[in-house]
Length: 337
View (cartoon, rainbow, N blue to C red):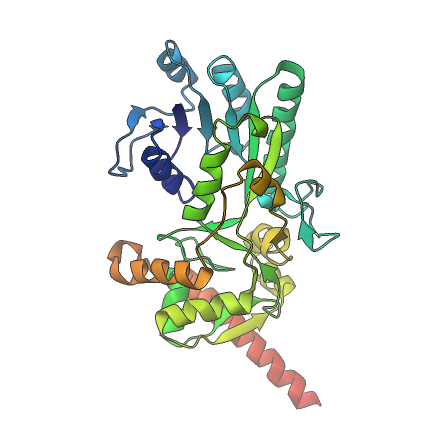
């Protein structure tokens, strides 16, 4: 069977591409050709935003599945509808679990949980994309499947609650240097982390699956951890006991509004998922990568790969300032008692 992946080399999609090749899929990657995965795929070195060039390339082609991993707004969806309506038996849109209702009215998230996120524009744009695709499916039979990933990580991404613009290395370094790391709230918010290899198993099971047409489904592990447990697992992988500095989410966001979406709109609420639907659609799916095992692989990769060891002085200064401000405020309060 043939599949076209727009992107196909990112945090989520790399392991999907590798697994599909292992399973015998004929995979074509449409991207700018910046990442060589070292596996056998067809390569279309194009910019998906160059609609005329993509249309010309598609002229004599058709696919069983087309999955776009890099759509973020409804204009891109309109483009894909024009390009792919007659070219595929299934179109998979990668949405986000952050689109689900914030704040939650119930701790467990189902696919029927309302989509609403007043805190994060990224999530609201994904919701609009989903609505447009569902309209196209209902009115014109566009063969969609909507997939909502939650917090997914791989060997090049250590999952943390708050980081700067240069990834997670700065937090790993702070742990190793025995400097406090910021944990939003009291660290007891429940959270779900899914390894990209597990995500890939479920995703591949949806590909070419006629039962998934017209459906929306999230893919996560069933393992649920608190952020305190997550950071202690990261510390264990580093061989260092982390120093956790619990800080009010409101205070963090007040100090840097860039964290409004990723915290109030995502990580500061419980992320617990009912995965019965993906298991019904893909009966063979079981997530097998325990977080302490997966994060150890990711941490080890960071420790041995200089390319991932990117310092972030701005984020370090922000963390130090937050820690200092909280300590000073505590000292002032205690002096008044």
